[in-house]
Length: 367
Ligand SMILES: Cc1cc2nc3c(=O)[nH]c(=O)nc-3n(C[C@H](O)[C@H](O)[C@H](O)COP(=O)(O)OP(=O)(O)OC[C@H]3O[C@@H](n4cnc5c(N)ncnc54)[C@H](O)[C@@H]3O)c2cc1C
Image (tube, rainbow, N blue to C red; front, side, top):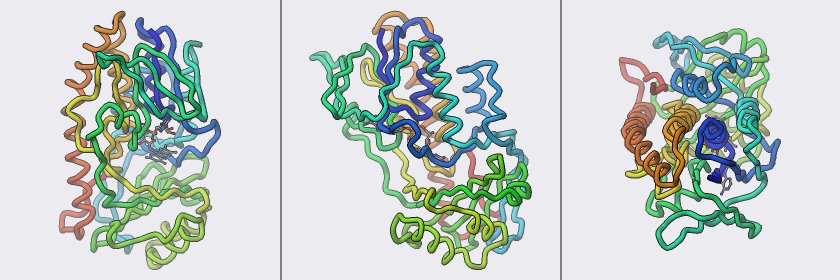
C-alpha cells in the first residue's frame, strides 16, 4: 500500500522510519511545506520515553552525538537563589536541526521514501464511503495513496479536514526561544537544566547546554502581562533587556551571546484531547494529534512514541481493514496518555502563572 505522510517534522520522519519496518507499506511519500535547509528551530529535550521510542525505530544508532546529556534540574529564583534541585533520568538536549537531519536520513534509508519538499497539502479527497484516496497540493498536484498520516504539527490543516470541530486553545503563555553561542556558560551549566523564576509568577527563564558551546534558552511569559512589540531581532533584544535587567549573571550572559535574528516567538497552545485519532484510513500523530504545552517537554517525545507504537501495530498488517483496526487500537492505547498530558500541561501552566509558593516551582517535565 502507498502511504502519504503530511508534514516532514519529527512525527513525519519518524513515521516514515517506522513504516520501513512494516509489511503494509510499499512506498511512503512525505509532503513537507518547508524547503530543505529552511530554519528548523532551536532544540528540545529527548526524555526517556522518547529515547526508548528512538531505540525501537532505529536500533543500534547512538544518539549521544546529536546533543548533550542532562541529568539534573536546578530551579532558582530571579535573584539566583536555589529553590530546589532534582536528579533527572538521563535525557538528551538536541538541536532540532541536527536531530531532524538524522531522522531524515533514517527515513530515507530503505529507498522506499520519497520527499516532496516545498509543497503544501491543501485538500483531502475521500470516496463516498469516507475512505481517503488522495491529497491535493497547493500547486494543483494530486497524490494518491491507500493510507494517510497527518503529521503537520499543532496547527494541522489535515486535522481540520478530518475533525473540523477540533480547535486549539488560546495562547495564555508566550515563549521567546533563542540560542546563545556561549562556551563558558555551556561549561558552567554542564549537565544541569537551570530555570529561574520571578517569584510573582508568570515570568521565567530556562537554559540548557546543547553541545559545542551552544546554550538553548527561553523566556516564558504570561501573555496577559508581557508583550513583545514586533518580531524583529531588535524587538526581541529590547524585550529581553527590559524585563531581565537585574536577573542573574547567567541570564545576562545568555542575552549578550544571542543573535536574536534567529530567535522565535512561540505562542504556546494546546489541543483539548480528541475522541478519535483516526478517521477511516487516515490517522494523526505528533502535535497534530495532541499539541501540548511546553511545560510538559513532551512535544518531540510524544511524536516519537506515537510513531513507534503505530509502527508496531502496523507491522504485520496487509489490508486496509487491518490498518484501520490498528488505527483504532492506536486511539485506544494513546488516548489516555494524551488526556493525562493535556491535564498535566494545564496544571503546570497554572502553577507557572501563579506566584511561586513555599514549595517552590514545579519541575517542567511530564514523564
Ligand atoms: C520550524 C519549527 C521549529 C520548532 N522549534 C522548536 C524548538 O526549538 N523547541 C521545541 O521544543 N519545539 C520546536 N518545534 C516544535 C516541535 O518540533 C514539535 O512540538 C514536536 O517535535 C512534534 O513534532 P511534529 O512533527 O508533530 O510537529 P512539527 O515539528 O511542528 O512538524 C510539522 C511539519 O509539518 C509541516 N507542515 C505543516 N503544514 C503542512 C502542510 N499543509 N503541508 C505540508 N507540510 C506541512 C511543517 O512545515 C513542519 O515541518 C518547532 C516546530 C517547527 C515547525
